[in-house]
Every structure is written in C-alpha cells, then in structure tokens.
Image (cartoon, rainbow, N blue to C red):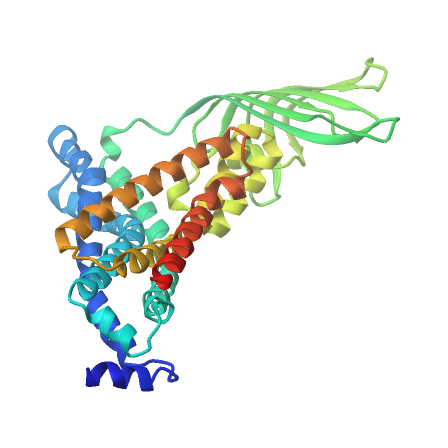
Length: 388
C-alpha cells in the first residue's frame, strides 16, 4: 500500500512511480507481441513464397535469408498496433484480477489517470510506427524486391511492356462559364523495353491554334536536352477547322513534350515500397494520366498510410479500458480477446477502404473512420468504467 501512496503523492510529477510500474509491466508483453505477430506475419506473407523460389527457381539460400530479413520491417509495422492492444489488455487485466487497480483507486487515483499511462505509451509507439512505416519498411521492401530480381535475373525475361496508353486531360472553359474536361494529349506505344518505345502514335491537342498527330517507328527520352527524340516518322499539323496545315516527314525529330508517359511506363515502386512523399509524387503523375480509378485508389492508400500509426492510440485506449474492468481475466483470455478485436478492426477497415475506393466514402473518411469509431468506443467504455 505504501507504494500506491507514493504514486498518488507523486502524481503531479511528469512520471510518477505508478507510471514507471505500469510501463515496466507493459513492456514485456509488448515485446512478446511484436516478436509473435511479426514472425507470424512474415511466415505467412514471405516464407512460403521464398521456399517456392528456392525449390522451383534455384534461389540461393543466402539470398532467400536476406530477403526474409528485409521483409521483417513491413510486418513489424503491422505488429506494433496489435502488440499495443495485447500489452495494455494483458497488463491492466492482470492488475485488475490481482486487485492492484482497486488499491490504486482506494488511494484516490482515478481510472482516467491509470489509463493515461497506457495511452501515453501508445503515443510513443505511434511515433515509432510512423518512423518504421516511412523510413525503414518501404526502403527495406524495395531492397528485397531488387535483391530478388537480381538473383533471378537469368530466369526472368527482359523488361517489356506492350500497348501503352497514356491520356492527358485539360479543362476548357465553356461559353456558359463552366469548365469541361477534354483530352489534351493521347500517347500510345506498341512496346517499351525500358529504354525505347516503338510503334508510337501521339495526338496533341494542347495548342489552341493547331493540333498535331505524330507517328514514329521509335522514340526515347533525351535526358541531356530534356526532350523526346522520335525516329522515322511523320507529323501531321491540323488547323482548327480540321484541315491539313502541313505534313512533315523526318528521320529524327525532337519535340518538347512531357515525360509523364515515360514515368508511368517505367517500372514504378509498389505502394508498399513508397513512403508518403513518394506516394504523393506518384499521385501527381496519376492525375496527369486522368485515370480516376487509379487516382482514387492511391488517395485511399495515402490516407491509410497516415492513419495506420494512430491505430496504436486506439488499441491502447481500448486495451487499457477493457483491462480495467473488474474481473479475473487470464493471459490466454486476454490474447483471445485481442485477436478478436484485431480481426474485427481490420475487417471493418478493409470494408471502409473498399467503399472509399468505390466512391461511397471520401478517401479520408474511408481510412480514418475505423480509428474514429474505435476511439469513440474506447472513450465510451472508459466513461462507464470510471462510473463504477
């Protein structure tokens, strides 16, 4: 009891004895959760595929082990929120079953003050999750992908894409003052080998006084001059009244057109290999292309990437509050409850994300609504526990 009195008298300090005690009790189950959940995730998500590559494609064991390690940060990010829920629920449930929380309340410590320790720890984990999700996991996953590709280079065909279509749009003001979205350019190529495009047809309607149609056997981006080099083709210049103005045949022609079509055609990073800044850059490229479905999907993904770290706060609040409910809950039962909550949250998050991609919800609401709902449930439970 003396220990609890000390914690009460030092409650005005930034970190009280109670805070240190609760933190020391939460750290071991948190670390256990990170190890367990990340190991389970990487085993299901990466090990089976790596074993198949070793057996079928002759992937060296050393390379497979390196790829396995590089995949870990991605699953550690997902394990942080789940481990926060497990740690707070197990810790507060054990202290409640041993009447230690009742002793704290008898010393005048409110439920809000006790739960605040778990929530503060959750904020620290939120920051750690953000760092991993932005700085470590994307770079590690990209490195894993590149390592795998280099190791299996002899087994893979040369990079090649076919039937590339890139439309670019602009808004034109109408007579009634409204703006209409119309095609500005259409870029088409039969094939792209990573450097040169072949079988090119470009319709350029970006100029008001004329339009042009370009057909060329091949073309490539000139990095030095920051222009396109086209070879063996013809340019048709068309007046606003749809009559031919001129026809230009060429062996080599340089045109200052956007390189966006090249950026989209080149192998871009997977979403999981991009941080938020890179995702926004990719979004700008997709906006130029005008594919609303891709734009919407990327907007949702960006919001989900920003909302993921704050799941730790939601799980920390819910876990600490549910654990503070008087009763006897063992570690096994706490683990089972954690699994149910985690499954329910991510299922609901998957549904709202899908509705956001379908246009039912905004990207922001689709990504953040599960967090808001979980936070509301946590506060509601906290208020009920505090009134007991």
